[in-house]
Amino acid sequence: MFVYLNGQFIPHEEAAISIEDRGFLFGDSLYEVMRSYRGFLFEKEAHLRRLQNGLNALRLQVEQFDDLIEIATRLLHENGLTEAEATVYFQMTRGVARPRKHAFPATPASPTVFVATNPLQPNHLWAEKGIAVITVPDLRWGRCDLKTTNLLPNVLANQQAHEAGADEAIFVRDGIVVEASHSNVFALIDDVVTTHPKAPILLAGITRQVVLALCQKLELPFAERSFSLAELRHADEVFLTLTSSEVTPVVHIDQNEVGTGKPGSITRRLQEAFREHVQQFCQTS
Image 1 (cartoon, rainbow, N blue to C red):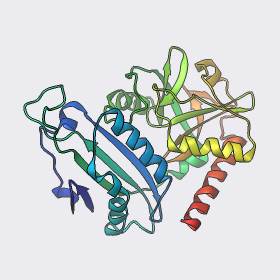
Image 2 (tube, rainbow, N blue to C red):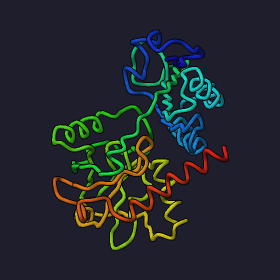
Image 3 (cartoon, one colour):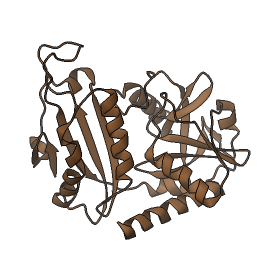
Image 4 (spheres, one colour):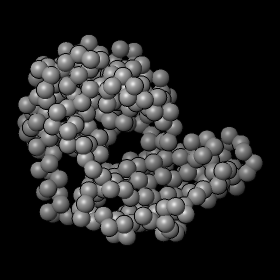
């Protein structure tokens, strides 16, 4: 497999960064993940906007930004992924700076730019049967809307879910459901598809955005509002949205059944609508 690193397309095993890279030392970096369906990059404009907003917030300028889609497309071809499902991973750091200091280097470093593609095998069992989740306190910082590589709280929460025999962990802050360790949370509350509104305390996912548009298209009542852990636990349906698994039903929360304990009808409608949306995208791209 080939990757792109700082202007070069090289074999994966040859890619390396300096131990003095600020992404390694401080997590001074951003990342983005796109989904590729048979070589077509899904919602690429939305992903690039989010990435650019993050770069602006970190005051990080990347000269190769305008070339990222061309780089990703070449990697998909080089790695034989144009007829399969795949993910494209982008990461940018502030680069190498000496000596190690918290403040930005006086002379701007050259950013590290890394792009990789990987084949994706969707978990069809998750989509069909649903998953189990746990809830955990949200101990993260206040700018979760920036897709930085500072993911230790997410890693620990997801590991806690794994050790509990669950598949994902949902963050709860002051009694309010925020999002999950790497996905957004939706709940059917009083027949309304409900998700937390955009805010600095969560990453508003691209799949989340698509699902809200599909709700409008299907004339399903939906709301972007805060809702409590109690509302989540009593919801008729719950599902997660994320790039790699699209619309994923949740059938158990903290070992308690959601609704009937099976994926609900609204979740199924949105799964079907999402797949139709992807098919249409591939046919018109």
